[in-house]
Amino acid sequence: MDFLQLAGKTIVVFGLANKKSVACAIGRVLVEAGATVVHVVRSGQRAEAAAKLFPTSPVFCCDVEDEANIVRVRDEIAGHISEPIDGIVHSIAFANYSEGMRPFHQTPKRDFLQAMDISCFSFISIANHFKELLARQASLVTISISTTRMAAENYGYMAPVKAALESSLCFLAKSFSAFSEVRFNAVCPGLLKTSASAGIPGYIDSYLFAEQATLRKRAVQTDEAANVAAFLLSPRSSGMTGQCLVVDAGMGMNYFDAAIVARAMG
Image (cartoon, rainbow, N blue to C red; front, side):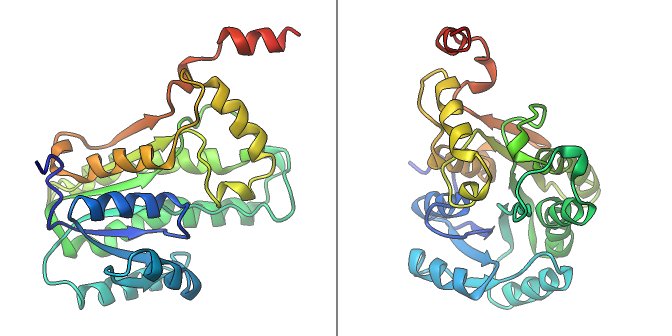
């Protein structure tokens, strides 16, 4: 039974980096569901990786920091497909941690604005420039984080950037409703073991703590986030728009776990 009803749907996935990335996991779920997946990656090196991981999927390159590239890749994809796009995945985030962590109030303006451009505005820009290629009831899904209200110091300024991304959902949904039924939603996973997260200072310690803070004492798996993304891309979620679905294995409700409290009390 094709419960998700994704067979034959055309989905464009932005952001695959390697086999551990969220975009890769989403792509696998979509292929297994019978969807036609088109990958858009940042560089030629990543295009080679994508081609090996998804040998039957077309791959295009686009550095979203330059909006002209989004227009270009839209035109390239338009020349490749024959049917409207049923869904777009936006799994793109970047923050410059090359100089290490600083207190939030010392965040360099250039770094903050670059992160906002790449991680948030790119979603808005992709939606805008791809709108003529979208099916009337297409679904756009971005990847956020489980909470933007917890001041994880080593995550720096990315939480405010993700908060802006989440806020954009309702505005995009409202503006697109004037001419379509396109939906906008986000998957908000807890801490994941990806190559991108490995570049965050102190991430491993945070990951191990978060794992113990889940109700099941096992970290969220990338595939679990991917499964939720597939649901949001599918017609089965047709009544959902402007929503952020948290996938954190209960971490957000488990602040006073007895084992964690006991360790804190020594």
